[in-house]
Length: 330
Image (cartoon, rainbow, N blue to C red; front, side):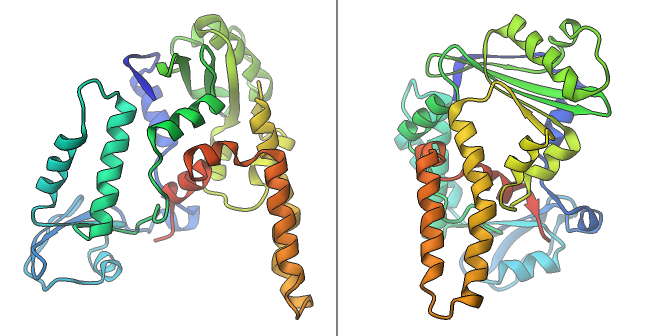
């Protein structure tokens, strides 16, 4: 998704830290302070654990019998995730990597090869993850990624995320499309001198950011502007219609809004009607005949509205994948 000569600019160290903090896995506020932290790396030979290292607590005592329940092991070692590799798995990975990579492969092709080999080793049992949050999500092909990219951002246009906090621009991220991939990854530092006077109300000030980005980098295809706390909440909110509701009440401002996104938001709003109905019907419909019909209507509406375009291009729902990666329950 990035060109070979992609340019990174416009991030001070503070801007970059704020941007990375947006994508940090986290639990609900009541659980965040007490949840388990760090990960556990385990190497075994099929019968005995040969090495075990906690990313925050250092080396742990090896020698326990294998296999073990990974969830129980994580609880015992106070780890939020566990990565397990059988002896020789790394060599197998590198051999397959060498066989499949070709001179001239771009970053997208290399990342997809990396993910495909990792998925194969997971299936074979050479490596294991706990929790495997993306279990069942297939690795897209390069053609699928290109199709989704064409839907998301046409050539010559840009995507912009502007995040505000307490009346100021907290951080931002702009991706500009050139040819088959993005050639620019830009932060807010280059835009701040162009913003002019800001009122302290981000629902007004987002216009200054949108205008500044177009003056500096060219036309926008999609702009998403939001308060930081709202954005963090929406990332892990699985309730039907959460994004559509936020856009409707201007907790999130989307402009420009491509047609495919507008249709997706309509379908998300429709879930508010059809998903609760499909849960309630079994209680009042003992025959069970009504529930499939309601679900079928909801699915058909989603197809009519075109919600499946981006999901169909990738083979999975990217927002659901993001939620699974960021949400922590342990």
